[in-house]
Length: 356
Ligand code: ASP
View 1 (cartoon, rainbow, N blue to C red):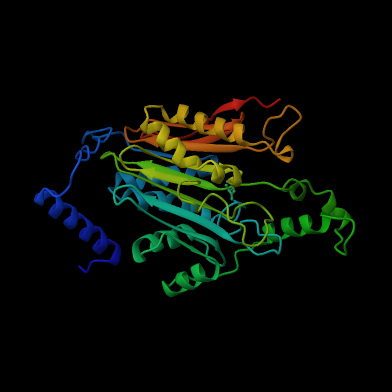
View 2 (cartoon, helix red, strand yellow):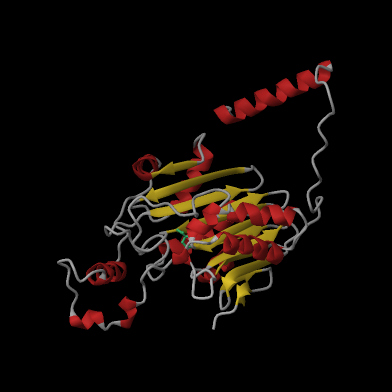
């Protein structure tokens, strides 16, 4: 098997370090040995944890883990169900479009055992951005491809192009466009104006994040989304940003995020949760700690309610190498999906503030 450039560079560095160490040429204190992983070889219970739209996804991911599949393949197989689902208007096929009516998808994947990641942003016409992200990880020396470059890459790898805008998402988009302002030439019908199914999607978010650990303690995660509804074309959220919408450290744990991506990017949200777990916090404590930072950092008046609290939500979903898991949100009444080997179920997230 040929070495990729990155392997070659890594192999070269390792050989160089060995040579220097052997010659006694390195002065000063030797580097400490790396800390042992949290579970030194002990089997753990397999877990799949996901945003609340992923009940079927955790079921499928667990089936794949039980069949001995690689952790990342299992996680991606889970979210593919939701990317395919036209009823989920936050992800993949049927996702809500940008302000020009074009569906632009963001996704990232991170594979714990190989300590590698791949991502795509503003990808159009491909319903499984998570699979394209995995190909970026496996078949390039890069981590993130965006826009037309990402689409061209997907095409070259045989992904099929299609129109991702369903009738449902087109109607919701048109309603938004037609009711945006009284000072333009777009009019809505009286009938549609009263339709509660069309009215509720003003400035909303939605995404799927799924993280898994298998019995060997190996971890992987994936996040995939159509992002902020009616966003400015080219806007990229946290989902394809490694460390923001997803982070996996195979020595510690995995975490992903949903909700207001800008707040997650600014605080390196998922990385911060995994770092807190490495410092000894439980997954739930770590999620709450990272959310508190988001609250502390949200100071723009447009982002605050009358009591000075964020007027948006963010949720984190975390699992550690021992198979302990937890999820938390800024606001109560938030849920997540989990399969911990017994059954797939929805559970309440811990939270910082109780909704009235
Ligand atoms: N975090 C996603 C974004 O900002 C949206 C979401 O999770 O609802 O694009």
